[in-house]
Length: 275
Ligand code: C2E
Ligand code: CA
Ligand code: CA
Ligand code: CA
Image (tube, rainbow, N blue to C red; front, side, top):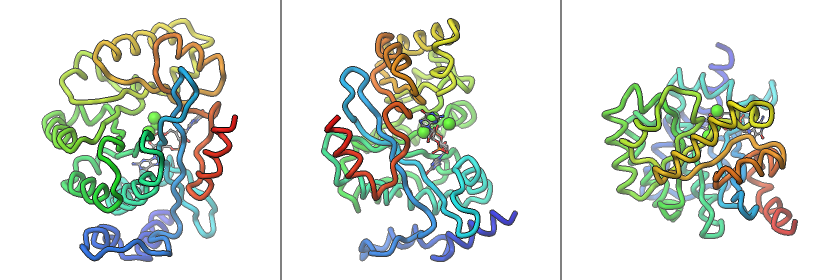
């Protein structure tokens, strides 16, 4: 409960709904001071398994609590979802990350996590449009990561919103794939662009023949459905090689880099490209 009040305070240092109002204001100008000083965006690279090149970054939010230190998203995102504070927080994440990505090389994409409640909130499509307009980021460079539960619980409205995003040109990835109950046959009926194979399968690859069979099945079917595949949580060169040889296109994980704070991103990219 304390943490919830602290989050409310952190978000209300500008009033809770202000991020939305601020960004929707036609006279909006980027400020020198961050709008939400306690929150920071980190970026984890996504890598082409064929040649090791960066293809984009996933943005991951951090909360630096003034007394408790850094609180991981597994703790504060569920609180933000339950209290609906995920709406203003999510708007801030989207707008700030699009602004950062607009300075990247044109081939790099930005992936943003979208909670179920954000996805189903009527503000998503207008907010995405506004974030693209403010930042000048091309829609095809933005990718929203959603989870399987949305496809199952809310199939009708999810299909409609996915259609609107597709019309905008924004890409959609299915996160944590394999942990929910979605069949690949069912997936076919939704306009999706990418599957992210959950870290639990990648971790099991080397010990477990059944994990290898599952991963290779997912990759083959995804390729057949024209869905791009990303493997999450790659920690060893052996895992990367197995995934590449099975036909997985992209990878993400500590083998390449942990999430990098926004202010250190330029330096990270310079070093990575020199390797
Ligand atoms: P996710 O979307 O599945 O993100 C991947 C998580 O795995 C991240 O944890 C990342 O730091 C971690 N990770 C990446 N590579 C490796 C690896 O090689 N090994 C291991 N063990 N872990 C790895 P993080 O940043 O703590 O985020 C946790 C979850 O919180 C995310 O899971 C996502 O669901 C949620 N989240 C984070 N930021 C946001 C946000 O801005 N909005 C929303 N709605 N959710 C967010
Ligand atoms: Ca994700
Ligand atoms: Ca994931
Ligand atoms: Ca996850």
